[in-house]
Picture 1 (cartoon, rainbow, N blue to C red):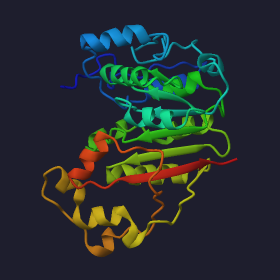
Picture 2: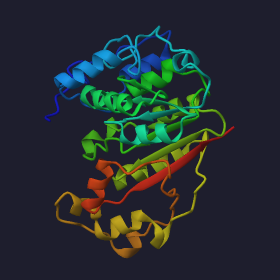
Picture 3: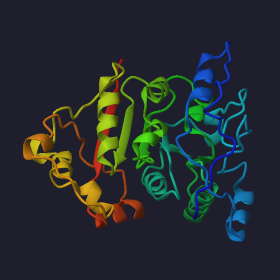
Picture 4: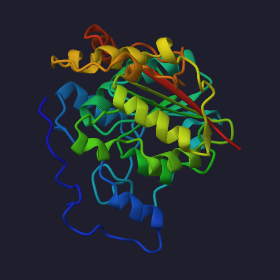
Length: 299
């Protein structure tokens, strides 16, 4: 499916709008979106599922300035939404829902919010939820930073999961990556002390960025700091052979052994609750390495 630009994005050549009464909102309006919208057209079967699920498994979220933004005065009482008080896990970028549906089925005492901006993917996810009879999942088709800012109170989320976010691997597009200093602050706000942030990517440059930026935050600690370093590090192997380039059919430019060696490590073991999706299977098939990271919210 061909990606189409989101024509509702702010023009970067124009000064960003400001809201003096809401600095966090101003920051959102200045920040480039971490996604480019594809066609929102649904197959008839998915459209029927969408219509049936709207207001049920599929949250009916009033829009703000864009069709993925959240109206400023909109809030959700999560205990009322799920009909109980239970730990909430937020997965950002759920796609068609393989990971979150598997986790929800395995953890019926936990509630899950799946955030996905692409309507066809969200429709597949809703269809999966209904087919599997999962009552502990809700789907939000909205911009993740705004969902965290507006729909959750401080410390209300038990865990945040971000598995295989768009790497925006071209240097000129790196600014669109979801994980940056402002997003780290947003995640820190919704997690309580001891709350967990789990991430995974198959792109080494993004993995290093995540490790560096979140590792530098005083609000998080890496419980696996120093682990899987040196010869045991997936980064060492990627850099030694330039596996990223090879996986894309490009001419590799491997580093010398002393430059390729990752002595920092800090990579987490694979999270047992993250099922292997079709996306990950395809990445592994072309020789990419998977980087897992885990961070714990400090007091």
